[in-house]
Structures are given as C-alpha cells and as structure tokens.
Image (cartoon, rainbow, N blue to C red; front, side):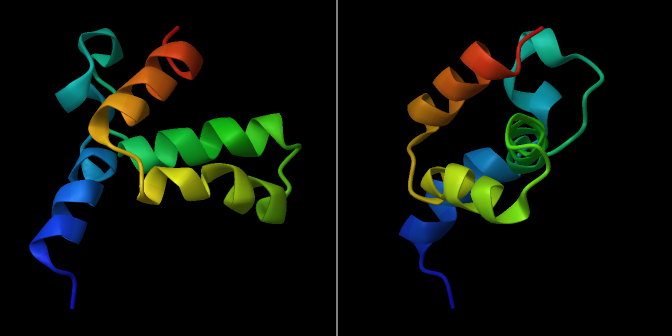
Length: 75
C-alpha cells in the first residue's frame, strides 16, 4: 500500500492537464498520459524506449513535471 509521501509525489501526474495549466483549457487528459503520448511520438511508438523515457516522472517533483509540460506539451 502506498504511503502518504508516495501519493503526494504522484498527485501531480494524475491530475488533468486543464486542472494544472491555463493553456490546456478543455484538455482533460491526465498529465501522465499526455507525457506518455508525447514521448511515444518522439520514440516512433516504441513502447520500451518510451517507458525508459518517462520513468523519471514517477519520482519527479511537481516543478519538474510542470517544467517538462511547459517546454514539451504547450502549444
């Protein structure tokens, strides 16, 4: 069972894009899925490469996740 610290660490990636970013209005996709989709495109839909590329988000703090989204997902 996850402890409070683990839950807190994953809370950001489980929130919907438009709950966190003003520029993502109407995008109800969870942040973890948006990052996954972006990396799948970047890795030519190679699941193994994508898994390795997104593993960091499970341990990243909110600021790192927000920074990644601002740089890579904001259109």
